[in-house]
Amino acid sequence: MDDLWPLTGLRVHSDDLELRYMDDTDVVTLARLAADGVHDPEAMPFTVPWTRGTPVQVARSVLAYQWGARAGVTPDRWNLELAAVRGGEVLGSQSLSAHDFPVTRTAETGSWLGRRHQGQGIGLRMRLMILTLFFDGLGGLRATTSAFADNAASNGVTRRIGYAENGTEVLVREGRPATRRAYVLDRAAWDARPAHLRLDVTLAGVDGAREQLGI
Image 1 (cartoon, helix red, strand yellow):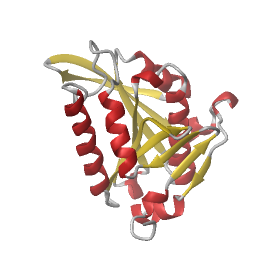
Image 2: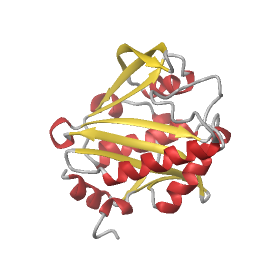
Image 3: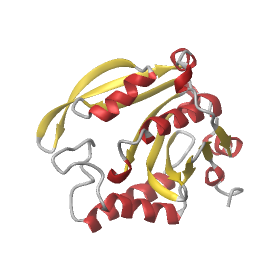
Image 4: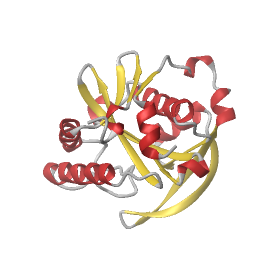
């Protein structure tokens, strides 16, 4: 249905890894992956604790969120949820969201991997791929992201790519205060990244995505 909902054709490829706009099968697979675990039970890397509950409750949270993100896309406000896929297996989710993008050229990234796929460098590759889509495909100028201070893996990926720190805030996380760090990466810093962070990336479906998003 590329003619009716062009975002369905959006693809980002790099070697054996693909980011693709989710169809219903991907969404269900992602929900089952989340039900198997996303992080250590003692931790909470998310502002909204959607990973708490029984496996069925977690899966339903993913389904509801993904369906809502898809239905809520407008040129003024959008959240692109892409499945990270390798060898036909869904590994996790990579998002890119923005408000008033045609004016601000700013968007926020977020991601998660199923627990069994963590610690393999996939998160870094996913971030570099979505940033390539953002800067080179969509004409973005300013990428933002954030993570709780105790989320070492996410903060490590962000700093490695070259984001600048952009302040902190204290949020309530499961009834307790927690510090969240904000980061920003502009076009100049992205273009100046070192050679080992320059992946061979192929984009597909970008023209249709730009049309639907009003870019």
